[in-house]
Image 1 (cartoon, rainbow over the protein chains, first blue to last red):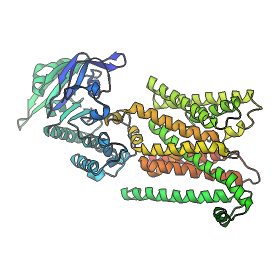
Image 2 (image 1 turned 135 degrees about the vertical axis):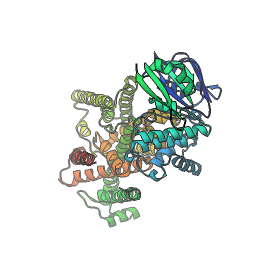
Image 3 (image 1 turned 90 degrees about the vertical axis):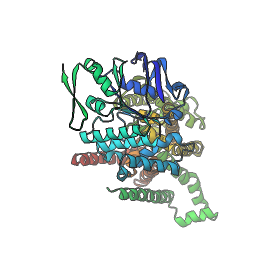
Image 4 (image 1 turned 90 degrees about the horizontal axis):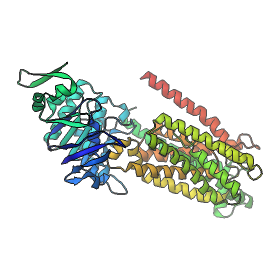
Length: 254
Length: 335
């Protein structure tokens, strides 16, 4: 369970987030949207304790985040960063490092850790890639490997920074479905997305940010109805209904 | 390369290298102005050897062979650590000024305290540590890119070398041995310096191997590492101190052996991948073999003359390294 109260945070003296009070809902996929520079990634990083907080606080399970050790935090919050180094580790080895917060010195991974890795690889559908090198994978496979690492971390809260960037469309949808399933199993999933249509289609909740402030929060329908997306992005957002009664969205520049 | 092949190749490469290592030790002990055969060695071990052979082995060959192996493995592991921590494959103890820092420490120490043999590893460590921390602080403060970091390292490197030369120029008489020190070599290895430095190197390598998981996680990148709960600030610092210990201790008796710290990690990464439990031992063994082989060549190829090992190391290492780079380029463009 993660929330923030009157949070003002940024990097060094540069303050980006302004007075954000918000609570993530467990078991829901929350999509965070906003124009470039609106503070989406900064908010995610604040939930990891990776920003400089100048005012307010992030609370994890009711306790201020600053009072948790980094290992304790890593057992409750996992993070899939937008970019990372391309190393020549095998997939299973990298995923195994997701278990790092659980091992005690001398840091030997146990059979339980290997079981968790096998489970995470199966869940993301990349068992057969377990011995491949990260650098040999396609973009979609690589993203799944990073997700598997976060899954192996076995945390109630999962945070993803633009997980679908660089993926082809079918990989994007596959990933969104997987995130939705994970949320359905009770995890709190927070994802920054650039694709508004996907966010509206797959998100259980949507958080709209602008210039470091929280503008709106609610279900995709509520957000759509409120007209905030139109205002923040300078768009005209339209909604229609498919044959099967599903909603879909399209956009026009004003 | 298929997956099972890769696993086999990794084990095969390690086995081959172990064999080469043992083989080189024996050749290095045997070869030289006076040949010492295997049976002579056995006799010395049993306590029934000729006094001449015993003297040569105990006072010349064994210290020299040990020095080569220690310096090679120390610099190689320092190279792996620095590359992983700075996430930069171009970094190496000789490139970013760590060796030069150690060298400057040694030159200063032998200028002011010419008789303090025991202080030399300490001085080398101090110099190396200063260089490493300076580079690291620079990287942290400015959030410098990988390229800037290497360029900064190169300038620190030349600054420290110039400082060494300056001391050298003023202290000509007291520093007769600095020329060979600059080139790097083992002709004047003394047991007094070798023992403390050797202990430091062995302890340093063991500690780095123990922290292999942390080193591997650091190479995933800052954000990924801290998201699995690694205290990146602490471990970066710790690893850089360890790298300074390793490089400093190696430089304190071997001089500025440039290439070993860059080529061994690269070779190892190429052959066994990034997994530290293979990468670290392989780098250490490869560095040791490489330096031992070059030293062997340096003292036997032009016998009775001996050339400084560092010269041969660069003559063999640099073209070999270039060959590796070009081959990599070609393979990339085929993809």
